[in-house]
Image 1 (cartoon, rainbow, N blue to C red):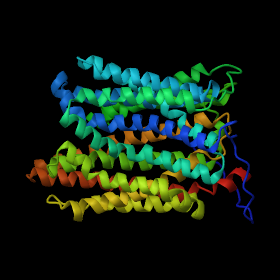
Image 2: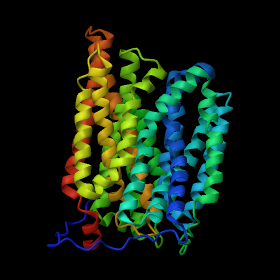
Image 3: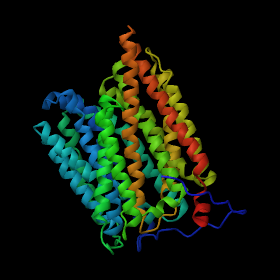
Image 4: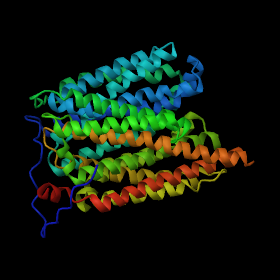
Length: 497
């Protein structure tokens, strides 16, 4: 992807443009906030599931007889279908109805959760997790587009995005606590079965409160070839990252083959979008430097943060000796701070200072937080060494998430809101997969080298995690550079581009 040529800034601040999408007809302000609550509940269920399952993996392995290598497929099967279908689900929301896609996704996810909870073989669990990813993609791909449709007024929109951003980013930390409690106090089966009442309640509430939104229709037809190409490319790419690259390195033959197939399919998809009468992903979206920049920044931030959560959990458990429940409690202050900042302060600060300064300040805070994690010792004090790093990270993540999403959706029309929402979610998932593979492999290589040199296990593990945290900070610094080079004020961009 390449950014479009820079457009000169206007000499005087332009008048705020009319919203690109129309508010939901006939829905009151109270009704819109009820709808937002329903949508965020669905998103929270999806986000929680990821980290809750991670905490339960050891118990799942013991009960179902997974080998160490096959255990990764409990996570990978979900991630591959989830990331691979986000763009397609977002575009289907534009064409059919975002509400219909959301309701279908919640239904599929809930049924798949039941199958996961009832699984008695490893094969059944992996297949059910793949189906869960399908439902998760359909649910989450359209939510941001629905929020932009329901809240076109800038101040309300920023506040609504702040609530959504908290759910999307802090839900993972909440999942660590919930997963630890459920796994230790009950059974790993309940990790999945707890989604049933939440899913059913969300489905009923969505039917009642989420407004209908007629899609634009298929017109010239659905770009089925484009859908096949991009889904195949994303699934192959994520598989390559989480399997051969993570296990055998980036120069392994299987990794190089998977990368080549991914690039070929992606190139064919771009060609198809440039020539199709009704493209799945209209390339006009990428005329906006803000959209391009926001998706690149989202990918880099999530890569750093996702790797941090993964390595941070391992550090607390393998070096500090925390169990699953205490690991979740350790991240609870981060979650609480994110909640306060996202819901109470992100909107007025973004409105006052603008999304670009807030995003730059956010990424600076995240970088500082990751730098603090590079200094955690083998014999750590939670209050002195861990809590400050977690709090700085939480502050940064909460302050900047609404700005990223505003940039990602800036200038999108009603016809493209769903695919723009799916695109930013795809960037999030790809960033998480890349971050996990790169940071974990770098940390493992460093630990292995030191262990072979006779360094004690705890010290070798800590040094490996330090390397991962350092790379994570470098990824966020790259995001800062992209923000400085590409991003412009969304209102100015909308009037100039």
